[in-house]
Length: 270
Image (cartoon, rainbow, N blue to C red):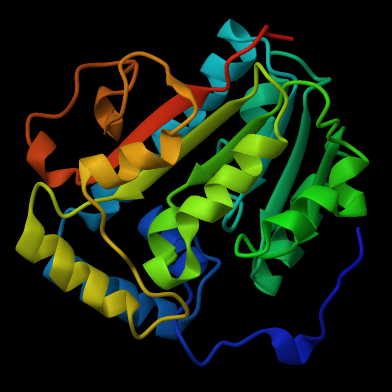
């Protein structure tokens, strides 16, 4: 796993979405600029920390579902963020140590932390690349060394697509992954929305405009469109606490303004 960057590439002068997310999850791998921005988000939307935690729990349930119930044995996690408890490979490999996992992120700091975590972690790798360039990800030697795209794969886009503007054509990016995947593959994604608390969500999203990525809130219909060409698994596209929950969803569900779902590309499963 090459470093692929120079120390000068690490920008600590502006808040970064991955480091802010790390702060919301209670992590320590963030800087004062990230903490200040995260606190500003919390002032606009006090539920932001709960949203992050529910999103993380959705990721873990989705991985467990894909590995245990759908037999997926290779996973491409894009926009992985700074490692914290219950990472994708940890969840997947507790059920089958042979599950192959490749993490992709465009933040050099994420890359450094992931490299340290993955030392001796089995069939797992990390790639420094950008979701906006899907063709590079899909053909990257460190990806293809572990992922065989002629076989079913799960692509995870968890809380990342809302950091792409419409000008960056996220629909094309998702379709590129969908078309490249073998039949029987899966796409799991989560995405922030303004459907439930529009003013609060918009105020929180505005903070990200001063960070490394703008936040684009999308409606249920707009997020559903990312699953075009795929069959949504039950219960469909729902607020993340409602997706195959391990326990009763929280009472203040309207404050969890993020959708999640898992879709399958038609064809025989591997």
